[in-house]
Image 1 (cartoon, rainbow, N blue to C red):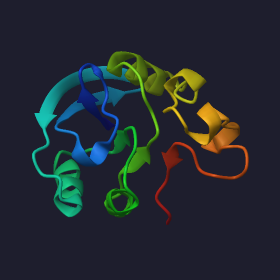
Image 2: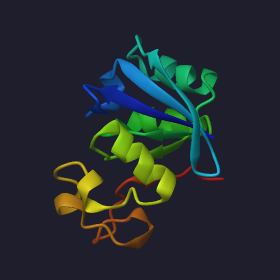
Image 3: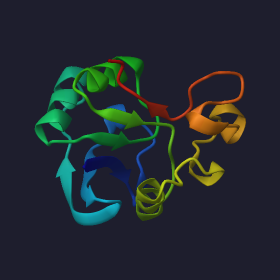
Amino acid sequence: MRIAIPIWQGRVSPVFDVAGQLLLVDADNALEQSRREETLADEEPGRRAERLADLGVTTLVCGAISQPLLVLLEAKGIEVVSRVCGEVDEVLAAFLGGGLSADRFAMPGCCGRMQRGRQGRCRGGRTAGRHRRHA
């Protein structure tokens, strides 16, 4: 599994569409195997989605993301876990350990500060967080 997390000053970048740096983490059985940083120079959604696909990303963990870019990433088979904030290492550890749904990783304003129920959904039915490709 290759996880991508846009980074800014040691934290998850607040908006993926304009993030300039990306942390790539290879993981196996929930254990980090390697990591490296990549520069994201292009902000055009199609090119940005293509770049992640070319890098072999299977999962993107990010803050806010525009709907057009989300759709492009999903079309490339990349799972998107959005509306996440926090220190990169803490977010990565939580993601690998299955605890990313904790309130402390929710972006401010997400469904009333993470009023998520099970399965990554906000109370009231709105999706909060995990976006999956539709077969």
